[in-house]
Image 1 (cartoon, one colour):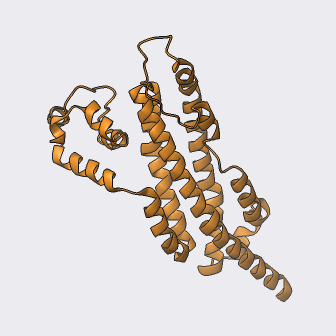
Image 2 (cartoon, one colour):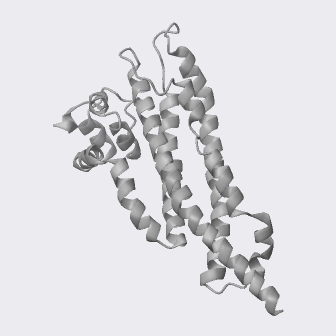
Image 3 (cartoon, one colour):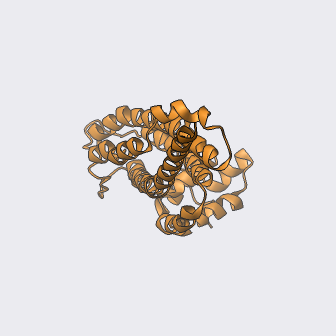
Length: 255
């Protein structure tokens, strides 16, 4: 049974299991030889619940899930699309980035002569900076662009006085945001190049194999996230912006 195995054995079966354990506060890289059962007993956790989550992770297919949601999201109003994107942001900030940051911080090689020492040292410098910049980007996008789109929606559908958005219309342009967003989509380029495309070899250290798998998975999640922003949110926002401009023009014509 899985709960009788040690944490290293469990994660070796499927590298993505490490992220599931991390959500329960269990770091396989700190206690690799402790069994799941023993660590659950010491922390008053349910081994059966964790095993269910691990099994669910095994059946997840991110590409299929995103494809299934895409058609539905396209039919949602803009506020629901933004809620969906914000929920993804919270997962990135509260789970994905902290886990990968912990992995990077806890990579220790037995020999300074290891061929992986350079990339590990580079990651220990570069990844925390990447994570910090990424979180700043998320918070800025939510506070400025998402908020502006919601105000456009309020004018068009919820009778917010158009005077309240007049100066915002001069400050923000959805077309400019779309152009910058499309150009800036490849957030992972530097990390990908640093790790030679997350290349895993037979001699790659175990924790580095787990990290590279997580980085590649995260890049795929970001690509799906960007597709929703570029192909669903931005077109909806452009229509709202055009509607607000039309309302402005009508106001001017009748005054």
